[in-house]
Each structure stands twice: as C-alpha cells, then as structure tokens.
Image (cartoon, rainbow, N blue to C red):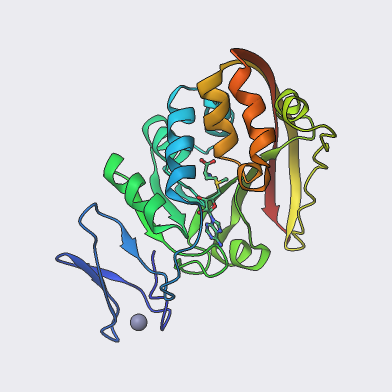
Length: 259
Ligand SMILES: C[S@@+](CC[C@H](N)C(=O)[O-])C[C@H]1O[C@@H](n2cnc3c(N)ncnc32)[C@H](O)[C@@H]1O
Ligand SMILES: [Zn+2]
C-alpha cells in the first residue's frame, strides 16, 4: 500500500492521479510513474550514467544476479519493493519471472521515467529510500541492489516475516579494470552495512568472469562513480584496449527483522 508523503495516509488511485483523504494529489506521469518526492531536487544518477548502465545491463552481463535473487523470492505472490531500482533492470526481470506485485523506487526522476516506459506491470515511484511512501509492515521482500539503504525505513515497511535482499560488490569486483586504469588501484573493502534492526540470514558470493569489449568497458566504467573521479589521462587507458577479461564478484545477503 502506498502512502501520501505529506500526511502518511493511504493513497488511492482516482483516474490519472493518486489522492489521500486529505486531498493531497499526485498526478501519474505520461510514462506511468508517480512522483512522491517532496523536494524538487534532481538527485541520483545522471542521464549519461543511466544510458551506460542500460546498454551494459541489456547484454545480460549481470543476469546471474537476477537468477540468484529470483531463487530467493517466495512463491506466494509477494509484494516486492526494489529500493534504488535505477532503470528497473532487476525489477522488470524479476516481475516477469516470479509472480507478485512489484514496486520500483528511485530518487532519480530520469531513471524512473526510463523504467516506467519499459514496463507497465511495475509501479515505479520517485522517492527516497530514506523516506519510503509505503505503509508500515506492507512489503514482503525488499531488494537493495548497489543502492543506498536505510535501516529504519526498511524495518518499518517490511512485514514481520519479510526479507531484505542486499546485493553489493565484493572486494575483487572489476579488479582487472581498476588495475588497467589506476597506477595504484585500491581494493574495495567490503561495505559494512549498519542494520541494527535486522539479522543476517545468509551470505553468499556470486563470482564469474566476463569477457568485455572496449565499448562494454566504457559503459561499465561510466555506470560507476569512478568515472567522475578519474583523470582523463587515466580514462584514456581504456581506449587502447580491445578486450579485457574481468572478474564480476558480488555479495548476496539476506536479512530478516529482529524480533
Ligand atoms: C548504482 S545505481 C543501481 C541501480 C539499480 N539497482 C541497478 O543495479 O541497476 C544506484 C541507484 O540508487 C539511486 N539512489 C541514490 N540515492 C537514493 C536514495 N536516497 N533513495 C533511492 N534511490 C537512490 C540512484 O539514482 C541510482 O539509480
Ligand atoms: Zn496526504
């Protein structure tokens, strides 16, 4: 159930809008998404990052993540909320694989517009993971795939028996790409999640090799925050590479709420 970001009452669909009983009104955009972000700030990934991510993901390089996550979804028609869904790659695929109700949330309006144009069976919302427009204990599964998270908001909207699935990069993820570009590549240290409201149920590593062309490498690089922090002279090192084999390595962690 989605709620009004202003007064937190239930939102009901009335023609081309959603309204609460205090008459706060949110029009459905032409592409089908709903903007429930109160600030007008243009936050999140840029258009260039989104296009790069879409081109890269479309080739199926991260399909193993989709399969891993799909195998962890319950089969009782769950409400699944993808928190920080970006262009909706995982949300769309999972919605086609496992029956349920799917909501994708992202703070970037351009990402959500992009996602909403592709899939009309998922409800896409512009909102922040730090203030989710969903009712308390309303969601059976939360997905958080390479995106910011919130312990308190995730715990609030998840049902008692619900699960939170977090996918993040492992230390050696894309190590060969970093070695190519940086003189002293730093190894990612595994991001420590601060989730006091949750207990860890399982932790798995998904690791495989990818053989990437120069174009794939450029897209991959552009979809990461590294792109904006890298000197042009370092980025240009990519332009002399024809192919590169890189390690893809991810953590897949499942959590449940503490009692
Ligand atoms: C690295 S991308 C991952 C997107 C998607 N899960 C994927 O893997 O394709 C991170 C996403 O988090 C979004 N984001 C950043 N801050 C956010 C917030 N506070 N709430 C929701 N989404 C946020 C960005 O707009 C971006 O789409
Ligand atoms: Zn309201």
